Image 1 (cartoon, rainbow, N blue to C red):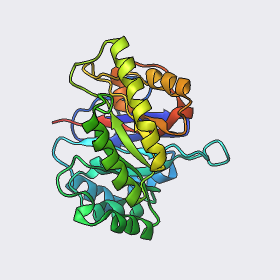
Image 2: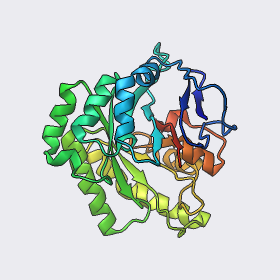
Image 3: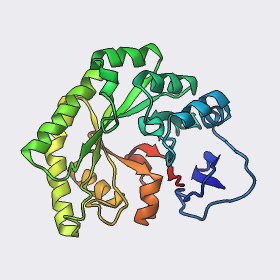
Image 4: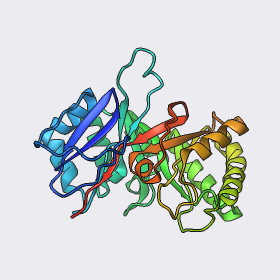
Length: 281
């Protein structure tokens, strides 16, 4: 079976998988099942999927039931003569890899950078300092696009703000450009009025902190019914009303977009796109 993900007229890729898969494309259309081929219109994606050694390495570092996640940063140059998006590697794609292995794979795939996570096994940066991590990335010509995550960011407490600022300090020290903000996902505070108020409180509290550390807050709506923030439109409306476009962007995750049933896209407000699907045995 093939998992076909259509991003835009610019990028269409098919990833052959060995288990049944859910289609998590932007359009939410049924998966295209056919010959086991790969068709890549993006130069970077073509190099990624045709590099047998790197693909083998990625597979060996993944659990049996694994995420296929090829996130890329939407380049501001896309409408200024650059027809291709810039790709990066999210650490979840190869969750058992060390920081240095992640950098090596991203460099080998000609990616622009990496997206790091704090919720994986092992120490962040393999236990090295944030400054050393920055130097390692820079030595390979890579950017640290984002550091993830602040969970339940829209449940504002003093403890949550302390947690957020702690992550911002690490992100600033390692040269990251953004931090990821993940909403509460426990079935609480899902009423429209309540969730809107909580989101407003969170953005008001976090914006001055983000400005002080020169970071972007990447807000990722989760499509689950238990999520307190499912729809990108609610985030975009609030960002616009606060005039906070310089501090906050949204994450467009194809998995969560599909689950939410949301139809609209917000490219001007999108800081990064996660092309993601679930493969299960």
